[in-house]
Length: 579
Image (tube, rainbow, N blue to C red; front, side, top):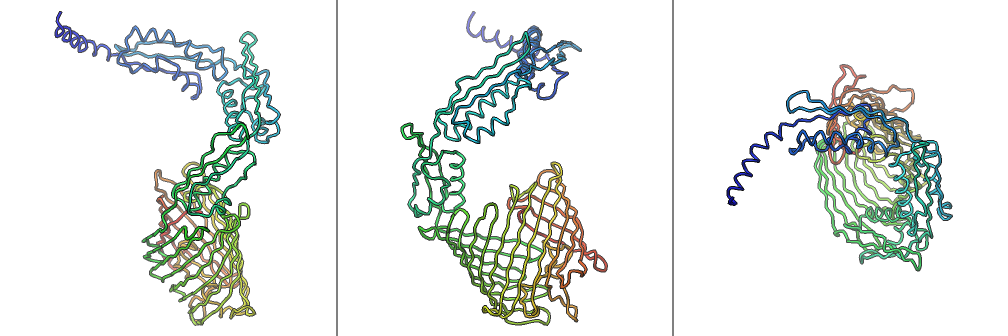
């Protein structure tokens, strides 16, 4: 037979055989076990894996069905079930249609009658291993689970590598299963060997003073090795903003010295950075921003930044010079100067300031201690003047939670004190405290409850001499919605808002996700700027639309001023992170 004839016969065979093979249709049903068990059974079951194969024939189907009982039994063993009862059925409800049904009774679970974990002397002294040993998923009296047993072994090895026990090893790791008495015994003996220390840190860069970079390192040479501190160094150098690329890697452990060197390769960031932004907010109207920054002004890590903003209610221009101090990861001195012009429905102001502040971390808190000299021309109703104030201040803030742009659960709290005295340059005496609290609680996967409050209080005998920048006003997208920006407060005899000595605002909001990036909200706000705490608070309520943008939620609120005649409506637009 020639090659051409053989080829034609093969083609004819494929054409006529394929329709016959394609006629097999099979469904596999697993009964009597939970979802996790069912998933593992299907992974072990050859019939499940080949049910859609074009090569599946009736003969092969029946052979695979005969193997199914043994495969299902093997699938249950990792979970500690060695005596299952399995009933398998193979039915043919129609031509070319097959149905495999397996009903499973897992039977009794295999108990652990003895569990022994022995740690070497070095590991016994390490609190991390004590915590791990106290919270093992497998214990005496429990059900033997091979997956949990392997997890314990992996966790011990990973923790040893993380904490510098590079010579750690299992002296014994054994599981004894007695199917006659139906019980399991687990024995683990893990020796840690010596714990290695941090060696020399090699900093490969030439733009920042090495003495400054050394202050970013959260460990010292000779201290016990901990991989988490290496990762912390990576984050700290990334956050420094001096470098466009940071590579931190532990070197090869040195058995002779029992040290681990750390290699750091740093790529400098470009010397200039520019930002340009356009936007719109109901409090400010259309707005634009331009910024310029030198993130690395010199080898000492100083940086300078400027920004200019303009909107429908005014403009601002500011410059900040930052100097890293103490712990440069969290602490810096900021020298600043700027001018802010603002004209709202209630006041006009041009504020010029120069100042210095120390921003630093205190544990989980942020602290800012400042001294600012300001000169302000202002008009508030019939009060107008040229104010000069030297204002010392201190502020504390803390945020709980993660993912501050889109938050499921989190809290932010801040409080600050400031004041001025005629005996220290200022035209007027005043003392002021203000602060705020905002909390977000998730209610299931698609709902959030959001509550916020803000307060402030001023002590002064010369309120009419205070400039608008230190008076309290309320109203707007982040205050009491339904009212114009800074339109709420005590009024003079002609009905014009003059601002208040005190501030009280609060809000509750329920937000529901529609899936994807969109959501809706319903809210209720209350608050006002007041002179006495028994004065009435204005109230607003309404509905909102939410969109998750890359820079934070976009909030569009339709709010009614429900304590005003006619319940007038106002639209508020606000963009920014949740906390």
